[in-house]
Image (cartoon, rainbow, N blue to C red; front, top):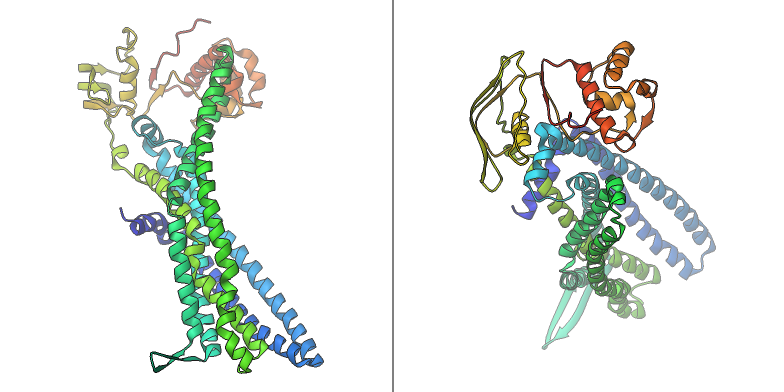
Length: 509
């Protein structure tokens, strides 16, 4: 996919959506304020010429008048700038809200998050949704408005610079030449040379920025794993091993940072020399006119400011090169996520609905490498039936249950399940919140106090009744046996017509 097409794929959906109408309004508002900012800068350039002419003429009244004009200009520019930032912030947060909602909806739909984790080699997709969407919108809006401002500034100040330039007359090879608006050409040449040098100096920044996001995300992910599995690691006394693992991850950050420092040093050196040298060309180009009296001090100061504005705007590509490389790297990472969550592969269901029975016909379950795990010719469970799957470890018991849930992709044959089938996994999850919310997660049921008390008592957890309103990180607070019994409490409260339990009765109590 070409770079432009990739960026359009990421940007366009929001602006085509219904919520994007508000974005268009904010976009137009900030665009108008950006135009006013450019107009204010042009007006300030004219004031600059008038002010220095007043100083040169030593006219006290004119100087005081220009000081008052400056106060009005400063006040107007401040109001415009503050409101532009305000509405731009609204645009970014509204766009991020929509984009995050759409990505998380697709990521969670059809258990897409599970399939991507099991079948794809995309690391830290959760952090990409959280961090990269924010960075992408921030970089997109920043680059768009800086580019828009650069275009308007080039157009406005090129006219100012052209009018101030006059003509450059010289003789070469026995012929007379006259260049109208020579200062404009000089500004463009200076900016283009700067862009070519910047591109050469910073050509490795895109890869290094992409790599930086990757190694930082890997390091954060492993820190989260230590936090989530703290008890198991503490029992195993794995602190030294984990320290070694973290050091390995951080070595990637160190190596990447070292390389970026070297590139940044060269790039910053060029940027500083380029920026500081920006005022030399108009000085040498205008010096003959100024010394001959054809240009006054105010005119020279106007040329100086206008030249800097034109060069700065035309130099947008060189000055924004680092930001562009970071934007491209963020877009590449986000495009990987977008391609996965939009993949039709995860919308395919290997399970069909049948209200009368659970049925498997001519089923063959395979690994991702194509190796057969097991085959089932015919298996039916009718209402009122009870069935227990017993087999040696590794025979595929859990795989069968995953196939019933539609979570096993490498399956052929016919699988039919009722639409009200409830499957309780052996791997439980209790969200942070009240104990009652954790027990009922993720179902929207509202049992009475009597039903809750009876269900807890049936698994010898009567003492938990007084803790139902208590908020904790129950995944960490409760023991494995307590969590196991709470899964049975959930079953008793739901009273499902069809229930599949995946090894939750292996502990006696």
